[in-house]
Image 1: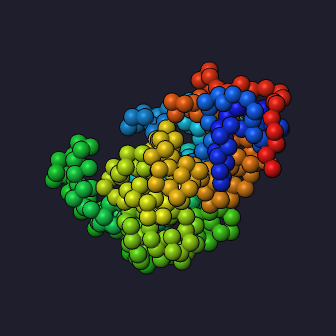
Image 2: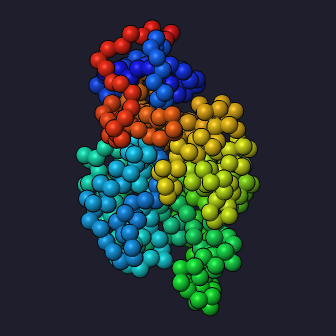
Image 3: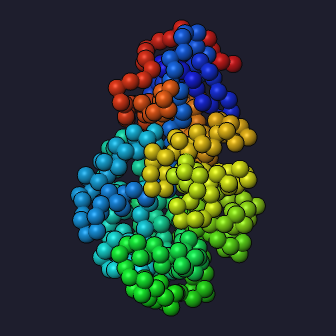
Length: 387
């Protein structure tokens, strides 16, 4: 099967008018095209290593539970329509969650096992990203069981205790709690109670070391989340994390880079030009050479416009910006069979029209999304081979 007369975004250059041949789900040949350009551009399929959407699909309103098959199927369709071909669904373990409710270890463990049972025959290649509260000592055993069962593909560790990390600004956290309907008195009481119940640093370090050993023993990558200080970035590098997700400050991101971690930030942040919570801007991090990976975070449709927003300032232009959502996450996560348009790689492709809309998505050479338009697909092509 040939896709012809299209612009191809390769890992190191752009072919303005090219064609590619797909055979058995793999890119078999890449060529120059002699035909009339169609106006369509082919990107490598986007790899999203952090998407928080599944929890909201399962519980779109508080205490309103949707069936797993409905939630997963809808998320699958959303991701494919956004050009995502590999997706890590973020599910969270939180120490402050009520037993049996969202983000408790019983509830999250059940979600992970159910997800594994429901993602085998979907269009997108779905994987599980366990977001683990490093203060949640009693849940480490549950994480161990899930890793041993092969139910988790990526682990990130975080601490959402007020006064540090994502919630280092206590006044901002109080204001956000008030927006959810609490009075100022109740919001402050809630925050103060969480600070009082903080887990000692010595126990957190023991937990991190144990989680790190588990991840290494099961060959699962480990990421840190919301690092806000130089000391925390050093600690996370020391225990073996390979990705720094959403660093809160420039200083923390700079140390993460110096220690060899790949830095991931949200596509919505890059698209909008700022963090919704007032943390480090993805555009500023990118301009400083401190951004390696774009993640959907809470909205997969932001990936393509984020790439477009970053391309003008990227040293390699559009090619470099595209690597943030394809080649780089593939490298960080050990996905050697995908992440770029190259012979021998999976035919995971995103077709974009002249209005910058995703019109088709291919997963392993099969169309997994189409809006009814796209380049002509043929069984042969009049092309000249690229050396």
